[in-house]
Amino acid sequence: MATVTNWIDHLNKPAEEVVGAVYPGAGSVEGILVIVGIILWVGWHVLTAKSESEELDRLARKRHSANDHKSNITDW
Image (tube, rainbow, N blue to C red; front, side, top):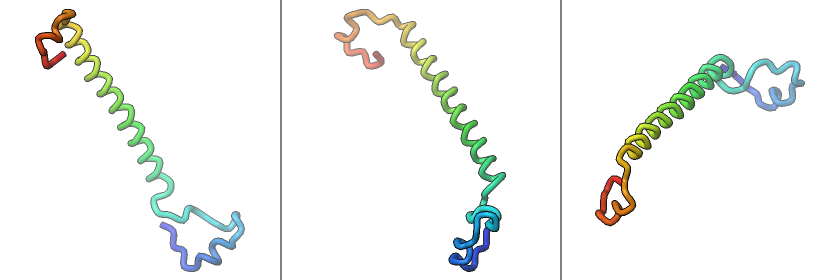
């Protein structure tokens, strides 16, 4: 965790003297959060694609006719 007591001195230092990030959690924590985020993102896409495919397959098996809309079928 960064402990900056004097921001003016800290900001006026040359880049070679500044060591580490100014905010907490930099480094391995960020990397872990990025990996977890990517896993959740890909997992969400896989689950969504699977559920949409199942729903489309279910609707395709019903084989609605051209006049089903006249019967007011709710699950069109």
